[in-house]
Length: 79
Length: 79
View 1 (cartoon, each protein chain N blue to C red):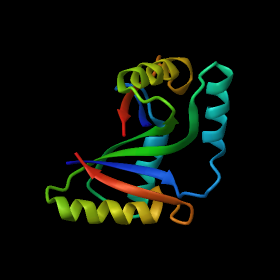
View 2 (view 1 turned 90 degrees about the vertical axis):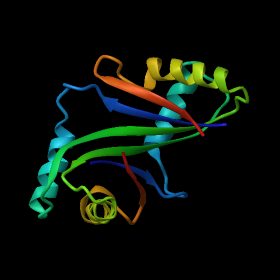
View 3 (view 1 turned 30 degrees about the vertical axis):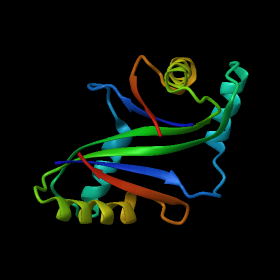
View 4 (view 1 turned 180 degrees about the vertical axis):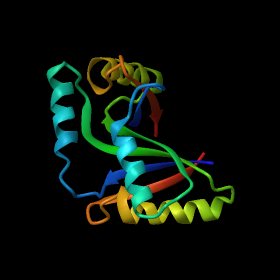
């Protein structure tokens, strides 16, 4: 089973990388681009076969390592 | 309109960050975790209203700035 975790900054948290991308796009002439936010995607190959057990394990991995839960939020997708 | 771009390394390209995450999970006692791949997600607020035009513009942004198309591939999602 494969899991994909989307990790993004919580609303209100300053996103300097997103701002830099926004300025870069403007410098390249792309207008009509509002806020830009950047996050991470982590794809995991899991030996689990039972979806709920896999989701619970990945949730624990997120809290332990993958996400900084003070400033980041995460979404788990089983694929 | 909002666009979300998933940028991941092409298969076969070494992913040191993914490997580091894999080792970190193993050190924390998570077994049954195979390959780990890390990528980026960029969310863009666009003034565009016409989906195809928005998709074409974001595609150009990917080739110009967001993705290194030599080693990365990207998927565009309009949300």
